Amino acid sequence: MPDSRFPIPDSLDQQAQHLYETGQYQEAIPLLEQLITNYSNSGDLIGEINALVNLALVYQTLGDLDQAKQTISQSFSQISKLDNTKERQQLRAQTLEVQGQIYLSLGQGSKALSIWQETSAIYQDIGDLTRLTESQIYQVQALRVLGLYHQATKTLTQIQETLENQPDSALKITALQYLGDVLRRVGKFKESKAILQQSLAIAENLRDQTLIADNLISLGNTARLKGDTADALEFYQRVVEESPLADMKIQGQLNQLSIVIAQQEWSQARELLPAIDNSLTKLSPSKAAIYARINLAKTLLKPTTSQLTSPKDIATYLADAIKLARNLGDKRAEAEAIGNLGTLYEYNQRLDEAEDLTEKALLISQEIQA
Image (tube, rainbow, N blue to C red):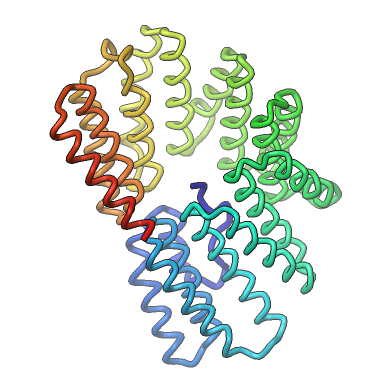
């Protein structure tokens, strides 16, 4: 599931926001719970609602969807105590945004879409055009999950027209990047590249390192799907060389590795692996660090790659991912890592262990969906 593209509301305590933004979700939970208690004791209903929404978002990000649903229900319950003012409407819309993310994580794309359409209607009514655009971009997430790419393209084109005469912003970059990504999915590679280059130019002008790297990765993905692997490798290399962000740098390296393995360029693959291992050591404990290891293991989990690395090395990547996921309380990532470890054991004829691991991964997944 795609993560939320937008930070939790500004009213969140700075320390909790820092923990969220750096992927330290488990550590954010007790702090948010304390904030909820403090706001409740002081009679600050709006502060309590904001903290509940943010706690629900943390649970959703961790894959603890049962807790996320319970927490978001508490938020709606508290909202019902407020007078029907513009601020109440805004709080309801923000709560609906996170509820939509929860439903999307549950695989209920249609429900998420319906919720975000309601959110858009609220923002339209109260005249909050920035958040209206954000909620429309959320709708695009749901449309993509549902495979409704043409409808997603139509929505994004409308957003693009709305933003065209607006000042350059992170929101504008995100909308353009999403449009470029959707155009790629429907095979419009030329248009995808043009839109992504426009998005990249704005990101470079704003010196937003995360969005610069995001757009370079997207440009690489478009080039790769079009069959221009040399161009794709160049875009990924730019991320590796230019991005100061460790999680983006390793994403570029992993995409390069995937291409050279597909092309059976074994010498290049061997050169990349030590650099990737080095990059892994620089990642702080986070969701990005977990999935970097999982994605590396999945790339190497092919019969043709046995000459590159040993099953023991792949198992180590996955064991590290499992340990990180448990430390961070990320059940979804833990289940995925365990499932891939089961696949590795199956490849190596350790069938009883493979079956046990696959069953364990399935149980965790069912627990998440419950």
